[in-house]
Structures are given as C-alpha cells and as structure tokens.
Amino acid sequence: MESNLHTFVVLAYKESPHLEDCIKSVLGQSYKSSVVIATTTKNKFIENLAKKYNLKIVDSKHTSIGGDFDFALNSSVTPLVTIAHQDDIYDSDYSSEVIKAYQKHPKSSIIFTDYYEIRGSKKVYSNKNLKIKRILLFSAKIKNSLNSKFAKRNLIKFGDAISCPTVTFVTKNCPKTIFASHFQCNVDWHAWEKLSKEKGAFTFIPKPLMGHRISAESKTSEIINAGIRTKEDYEILCRFWPKPIAKFLTKLYKNSEKSNSLEDQ
Image (cartoon, rainbow, N blue to C red; front, side):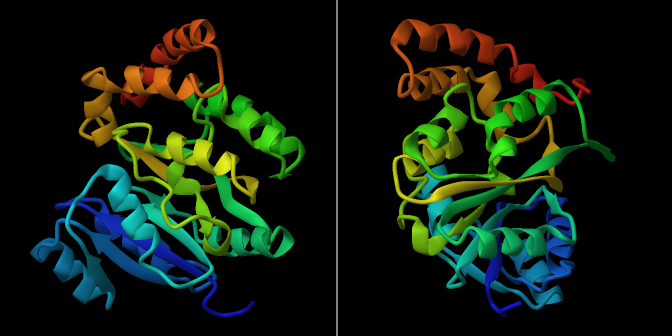
C-alpha cells in the first residue's frame, strides 16, 4: 500500500481516563497510520501521554464543538483523516479496510463503518440502538457507495445513521469547513446533510471496526438531559421533511434517547 495515506487525529479534551486506550488502538493498526493529538484544552495529562507515545500535539482555542472538529480535521495533510474521539477504540484492521474502500471508491467524500458499543467493560454488538442504525443503513448495505444526492440524503433523512467516530474523510473531496455550526449535539448530522449536497460519494464498510463508548458522563448525555437534542433533531429533520412530518419523527426520535443510557443493553 502507498505510504502516508491515512491519519488518526485524536481529539482530546481535558483528562479522559480512556484517552490512552484510544491512542494505543490507533497506534496498533495493521496499516501504520499517522497519529496526532488535537486539543483545545492542552494540559499536563495530554502532554505526558503525547510524550509517552512520541506524538505531536496541535492545539487551538475553543470556538465551538463544530469548530473544534473542523480544526481537528484540518490538522493533517494526508488524503484520509479520521477524527478519533478520545473515549473510543479502533480495531486493528480499521485503517486497512478504509484504505481498501478508498482505493475502490476514490471519489468518496466520506468512508464510514459499522461499529459496536462499549458499555462499561463490555463490547456490545447488538441492541435496540444498533439495530435501528443498521436498518437506517440498509440502502448503503445494498450499494456500498452512494453517489447521487438523492441516495445520500435518503440515507440520513430518517435520522443520523452515520456514527461520527466511524467516519474517515477524503479531504480532497470535502470542503475545509464541514462541522462549524450552532449545533451542540447534531454537529455530525448537520455535516452529513451538508456533504450530501456536495460532490463525493458516501461509502459504507458493513463491518463493526471500532467501538463507541457509551457513558453517563458524556457530553451527549448532558445535552440529551438538557433537552437540546430534541430541538436540534427537529431543525435537521425540517431540512428533509415538511414540518408536520418532522414533528412526528422528532417524537419518535426522542424515544430513542434512552439508548445513551448504560442501562439500555
């Protein structure tokens, strides 16, 4: 394989007890991706881990959640970039599978995979939340690379089917600013909706190649508890549907919020 194709940008915030596990997982890839740490909260904890694993830190001032994601995305010069969330882990064949997909579908804007959840010390490969996501991804399973605007928008019009930490961006096929917005929870759904109107395919790898951690202390859980997600869901759904249908779907979507609870297994 051609060298220097892929970079993991590990987005680090404050002092996550799971950051080192994330770092070890991205350094342990069968394809040796580049790894850098991006942060807006540079501190001794992050600096010590960077020194331990000989990693470069790129830091910036916090602007917004979306702004921080765009900063991380633009912190690498390789053709492929994955924003690795500090609490998550990546299977050793994630990079190699993504590169194979890229070589087969070089006009992709994003390449994303299936995933499993990490709940406490357990890896959960099937539950209500994951089943719903996989139903939403049905069209992408039939045709792994979706090129048309209709197909891409159809994939995400019923909900945020694409899990952000599974996504690798093909930078030459993406705008520089993707995430920046007023959203706090639906930063990624906003990004997919934006990219769905641009050139570039959505390419899906139907294998669970990374683990997304579900935590009661996560930012997503805080936002759900504050009722912010429901408002943002409605705003995004209105981009696809008339308001009455968007309201109905928002109510259905609200019932799924409990899936971010550790009790939902």
